[in-house]
Amino acid sequence: MKKFNISKSAFTKGLQCQKALYLRKHYPELEDQVSEAQQAIFDTGHNIGHLAKELFPGGVDLGAYIPGQINKVFEETGKLIQQKQIIYEAGFSYDDNLCFSDIVVPKEDKWLIYEVKASTSVKDIYLWDAAFQYYLATSSGIEVEDISIVHINNEYERVGELDIQQLFTIESVLELIIPMQTEVKRQIDRLKTMLNEDKVPDIDIGPHCHDPYPCSFLGHCWKHIPDYSVFNISRLKTDKKFELYNEGILDITDIPDDFGLSHSQRLQVEGEKNGTEIINKEAITSFVNNLNYPLYFMDFETFNPSVPMFDHSKSYQMITFQYSLHIQEGAGSEIIHKEFLAETNGDPRIPFIKQLIKDVGETGDILVYNQAFECTRLKEVAKDFPQYENAINVILDRIVDLMVIFSKKDYYTPAMKGSYSIKAVLPALVPGFGYDGLDIADGGTASLAFEHLFYEKDQDKTDKIRSNLLKYCKMDTLAMVEILKVLSNI
Image 1 (cartoon, rainbow, N blue to C red):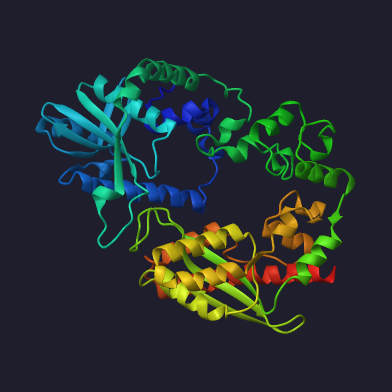
Image 2 (cartoon, rainbow, N blue to C red):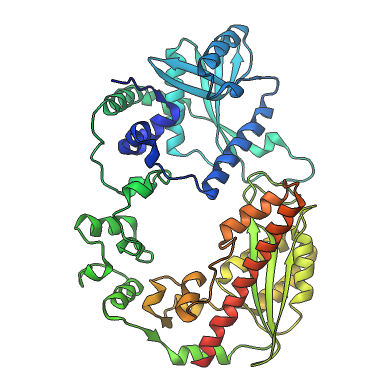
């Protein structure tokens, strides 16, 4: 029987779900491929970890030996401990368990351990991470005076050069993880025993599949769930979804009439059962007739870098870099298109807002889809660049939310499947028209693509990414144009 060791990542994965850990060890081919979004999260963590080393300069980095030369990491860690050196990616091993600590700093004859996270707070899973490291480090013979989580300080606003000391917050968790040591040992033994069993743990899907992280075996464990099921009921709490699932109910049409649902959720269920459609002609007519021309159909794109790149910005702040405008001077008149996509040679917000102020003119309604997003971004720009506040306030006063017709269920068809997002509404109202075939087809991908442009050296790739970004944002406002046409015809 193969002897399995428990690493830090295996430990935290096993805490979330033993079945997931067993599958990773025995059936790794069943694991989902890493998505572009997930890889971006990994890359962010790596970059933040690298940056945090500047808090404790002069260390020896053993990360180059991982994963191919793990024994070398342990050997070098032992030597550097004797020399009382600062160590990056120090390796600790005890009883066939292992971990790599981000930063280990000597303090006289004791040691300080720092675990770096790209989040903005200390989460419960980080305590287990730290507790596991403390258990292995102390069991392997070193005396740990303190162990801390280093995380992003999202209150820090960059002005001038990046201030590493301000960017990070260091929180000691020693008092929290000391009482966890007995449980750490018990969980390690439990996971080792489980891994040596000859069958996969019988664990059904549940809330743990997404808590604290989306599991990498969702594709395998959820393959019996239809594409459209009780798990797609809009805004239904997770425990209620699993209440239905545990009663053997997957199809929305099988939900009992007396099951507790909101009015909106019940409409979704009735829509599936009976084909129920709602078209509130009075509300729709009032909405359309109260629009003031010229109309500007507007959509923004943003990205939110983990490390503030520009003056007057914070970590993970949404930075506007692109907009699309379809403009209609009067009912039935020809629609023209304007757009903006920032260059990556500086802060995109100033050229963004200067051009937007010019392009939206001074009169007429500005239609958006989900005004909370665009209005919040505009208010942020006004706060960071007060010279544009007055002009931005004029724009804010002109914004009208096209989404309200659908969020209030004044227009609902079963084809929307309970959602009022534009990507659900558009194909329901205009079949065959949509985002299919676009290389960039959602805001998350657009955000990653633009941030990538700051580091892309190949001009051909840059040109292609910019072209794809323009096509995607243009589709968002064109979708609003088509949706309003349908409402106007009603």
